[in-house]
Image (tube, rainbow, N blue to C red; front, side, top):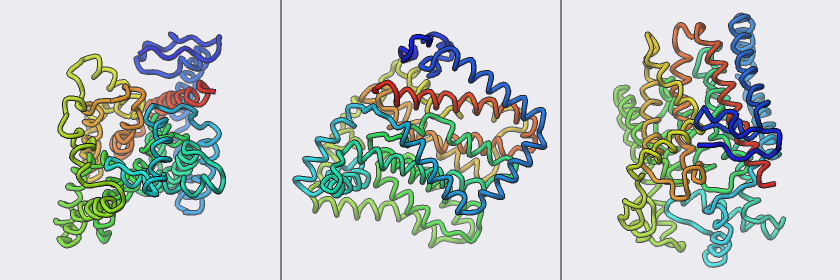
Length: 422
């Protein structure tokens, strides 16, 4: 994949094409070299002053244990999300404006079975804000996207309590270093709220694994809400089975039953509600992607093409660069162990299969947000496993360098979407 022609004349589109899937070329050779130098310096600094890094991590942990500190940082994060927001729209995002306007005029909202709750909330919000403030559909989406990014930051920072005090930065920074965060920079599509709910599901699941007195049924409810936002959240259902087995072994049989039934009950209630509000249940077998619009799976499954698979792998590397560190988990004593790794490993498999097996209808990079769901569980699995290792100190320098490189790719991609359309 050759990077797009850069915005300014001093940039070189071939400067980093040896990486395969990269976005540095948009910013040009000087920035690419600066990012590499910054990564090296960060790694050297961690190797040279490990005690300073440990003290800073512990101090950060103490500060972030306060909910108000996390809330302030989350609110502040909305500012860069908004001022570097995405000015590009794919075909689906462009068509949403017409569909929502027509749906609201006919039924008071616009809904499809693939993204019931997300479309319903967006269309109702536009119905309220358009007459009051004159916002169009795209502007409404962009505001919700950036605000949802603040919620995601709050949830991500809350994860620090699940990992050692000196190693939580690996996990949190590794989670947000991927290109999937572009969905929080004003994306006009129906995946933003889904990914926030997925992040909430993962956080609630880790809390359940940590605390023996924690209930599982709220975790099942959260996953059910995610499924209502977008049916693609069903790829996380196998991970709920891991939690159900854990609850059963703890003697929480009723809790396990409630957690298992929460999703189906919510889905059935939503289907009944929307069946009476302009969306017939029969559409589920004829117009929904989960049924391949009447069983036409050949049009929705990935073609058996090496080029297509290679492009999808590159997209996965951009969205979830943690995938590049998977081999590091197979070296020596690095193999993932414990309940976190089992749960997150299973949670990562379904979304990865979605990336590789479900066809990108708009093209690999136009449908990037469809596959963003793969990044949170994969990032938490890889960096969580690395953070729990006994000898992570020896790996810290190259892990920090890798994080800088990952974050720089994502930064360049965000700027590309922000600047090119302008």
